[in-house]
Image (cartoon, rainbow, N blue to C red):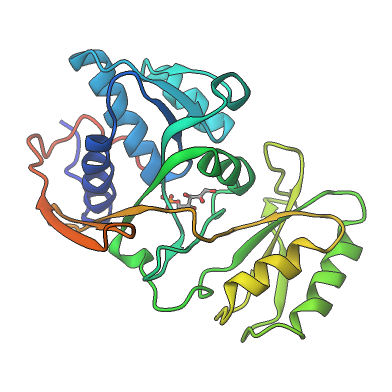
Length: 262
Ligand code: 5RP
């Protein structure tokens, strides 16, 4: 018998489960990346297999694509799908305006392209991701490998002119080597502590040659589903200005998914 889920995994699971309510047969669905998004893919896969849900998934990373296929979800590329009904993804931070930091899992570029090409973006997260001001989580910036040290130096120089508290920039590593994104790029994590003006920050940082994209998702997310360890969920809709409270019944605590936590 598998172990019951920890409170944090329960929070991620119930957020993902509740977000499945936004998905209907016939939809083209952007599938996010990370441990919370992996719960979503599992839950959607269960609906495809057991309830006849008929969707086409557009994954935001090779690992999500692999999991989606394993779960029996039909997968296609964004170029094939062109425009999506909905994207559901995790986040590293979200604020009161549902602006986000993403890219902790290194998939920010595909995630941003896919979310932007969707009618709606729903973020699924546990309560710990909610912040007053963005920036405590290191902001990932994807850069091309060519001349990356020069790009990093330019980014560091630029930080001094921006309203942020921290100025440390580190190359993301995967063991002894640089972490490589699905696009073959590097990631520089910016330890900013507080980003007072994310809009200005995003515009300025993306001007630097060699920078491909940053992990600030501004005005992209429409709804956030916040999961709690006791099964409660809050659904905040920025367009409607509403917050709805629900409880997700976890019918099988020795959950078949409990092997999933990444
Ligand atoms: C990957 C992401 C993830 O959505 C983010 O890192 C949250 O991951 P998790 O659900 O594992 O906490 O942006 O690039």
